[in-house]
Image 1 (cartoon, rainbow, N blue to C red):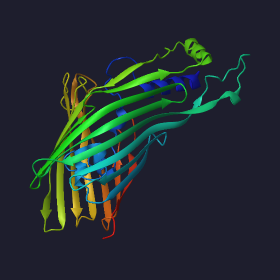
Image 2 (tube, helix red, strand yellow):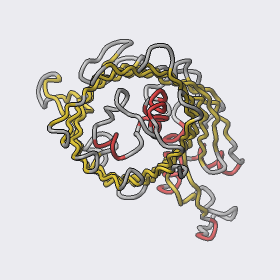
Image 3 (spheres, rainbow, N blue to C red):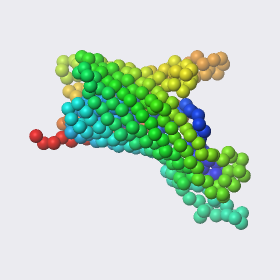
Image 4 (cartoon, rainbow, N blue to C red):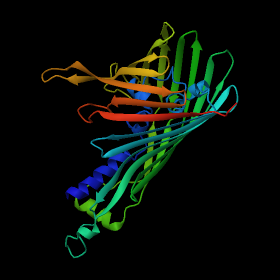
Length: 359
């Protein structure tokens, strides 16, 4: 019974709602973030990001790439190593005013025991009938950005493909679009991103054999049915400014606010349908080689033992980075996937490689 429950939990954990509605946390794996720089700064990135990770944070930032080609990768583990999160990104300039990028992210739990077939047709327990499967979410982004009009203004967009799978039992395909813009004037930078701007739709299909269905019925669990899952749009606004001290030390704070449209959430400013979730990040640099970063975000209200919601919690993040000869960047972040009471802090490393043609 315990093994059967694990399978059922895995299916619903990764599939979410299978009906034509908009759950608050649909495709939530795409909100974890990529790159240790952004995670250390509490995801405050949409205004200042200007490298290969822009394809994720704000596609308009791809125009800030000065190299012929940039490659970035990251691996992280959460929930004591049970869940694994991977990211790979590639970006290149097309010409003086435009750039493209390709991004892949995966969040998954592997080697989950499937014990629905543990008992054979004679009612005997047979451990040889135990198999394993993976529950994983994949996101593929194809990005394009271009400088337009007034100098300092860039726009960009993502065509997004989602693939979610729970072994051979369930899978879904989804499609969506992101749009973004950045504008730099002097030392000020502003950015805006509309994620899932047309809403992203996941079409779920389930393939349960008769034996598994019988187990679900015997354990009084609902049998999932094919359906459509919708992710509603989210808007992220940001502003950043860089201060330079004696041409060696740089200080850049960035402030972002996430505006969700799927109803009241437990954030700093909840509302229906709009909720506002602010994030603040800070980056200190020395000669554009060494970096120290920090941030505060994920502000939530908690309920007191007696009375109403009257206390707040927040999530701090820290990190460091080093750039070697403008070619290799190694970044580290000590961060949390979400609520500290649910997931422990994780060590996240990311690499970025810049390649240029010889003159």
